Length: 301
Length: 324
Ligand SMILES: Nc1ncnc2c1ncn2[C@@H]1O[C@H](COP(=O)(O)OP(=O)(O)O)[C@@H](O)[C@H]1O
Ligand SMILES: [Mg+2]
Image (tube, rainbow over all chains, first blue to last red; front, top):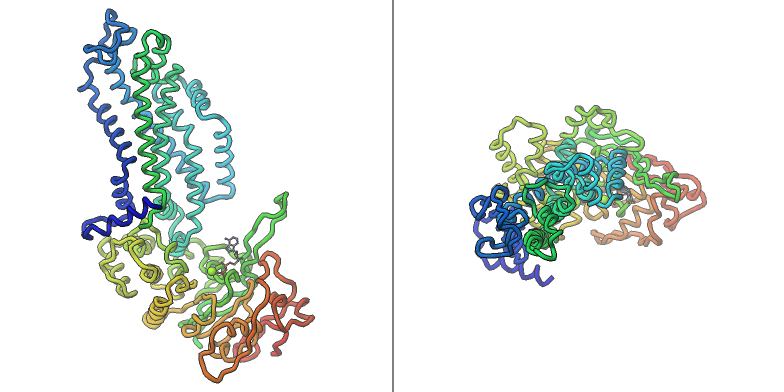
């Protein structure tokens, strides 16, 4: 309450310029930039993206090629800031490169989730009846399995590797997205602006894509942001179980997996990749929370 | 009176609701339960009744937005429920609707030019963007809005302005019939008459035919040539506006009229206050649907449903007490 009142007052003080875009998205974006939580999250995410893009430039060593058995199991030092692993590889470099895998998995798995979830959710919510029944039965079956176990099952079934992880983590998330979209589409399909569009002779496709889905984007964006952090965590979990990307690919999960056996003597092997995961998940969750604050109290103004 | 533009014959629209624990026996909301009326070219037919009596459902069924349960609607000589998809698309152009809620009737994510121009995108896909925008500008001017509003979003407008945008959208395809579903009931009283005047002006300008839906008789009074009164899914009385206001025959019409202030001095009117609530449209009363609330109810009313009969001069009424 208090917060929204404050926000409302701000635009009145500014002179109304013609160039200010009035689109609901631009209004939300301006509000987002004023939201401290969201911006903190965004800074962390941008920081991670920069690291993954410039990993080859900023890493002191190559994460795979530069191994030196005589330097194995070293704690943090000036030479190796985060220490080295059992093969004498620089953990800092591996953590920096690991961001590439984590971010890629976070995003790529969302492509699977979004395309399946939006398509099936829109079909179920819009056409209802038998289509809805079939899709929702599948969703219920999906939801009956714990997500992580399901991802493990898929990984075991189609074999290890990076692409398996993209697919497995995307696939376990679609049912939630499907429910979300279905509910939204069902609510909007009864709205008067949809009836108006139908009166004009709009096709079902046009109504779904041009009238309904643009109105469902706020919760989709929020849930996708949160989904990225879940996927990153799940990837770490899969790698930790040895089901993710295979060695010597540097991923945070597999670094923790291999560091696990030395945790009492060489805790740095687990701590640094662990911190990287925490920071990433924290960043996306902060951003997601901020987005929720900005987008959820429906976009009137 | 001119020729008929629209004929509604025994139209019924039921909404299934699953009832009972076993969910097998389906019940129905009988929103529209056998109504008939004609609409003549160039006239305004007012449709009045309490909230929930089936006015919107009537309008939406005629528009083809919800499937009818029974009956037929003949528009401009065509039985619209038997039209093929293509033919329906063409006929759609000639019938449009203005909605009640100026907030939910405009897509909040679209600019004015997209909301109004959508009609052209659908029916004239080859029309170029600048041409489309020029058409939208023209429409904005027609409904009394600034043509600079092209790139504005709905949230930037007041209720009255939004309703004008909705009217412009309905006009885009140059329809013959416009069904206005309580177009002013959500607006401030001060704005209502402006919008009503606009509708009046447009009717003359484009020789439109209106079905004007309202929940009380005072709004339709100045606008309608003829008025139909609905109660619980039925039309109970239909007559020329003047006649209906001066000499209402159905007790329900009398009750509705006695609720609005008398405009002329010296005209006396019985004061009828309705008791009880409107019964459920899921199981409407047997016999005359109004008998549970009618102050003049006699035995026959509880048993036999009165016919909707012409008592002369195209004054239709469904009441056992009125002799034709
Ligand atoms: N989609 C629907 N599903 C079930 N019942 C409905 C639906 N639409 C309307 N009804 C019911 O039909 C009846 C008539 O509604 P409506 O036509 O909206 O009345 P009015 O416009 O006169 O207020 C009401 O009892 C309403 O609850
Ligand atoms: Mg209504």
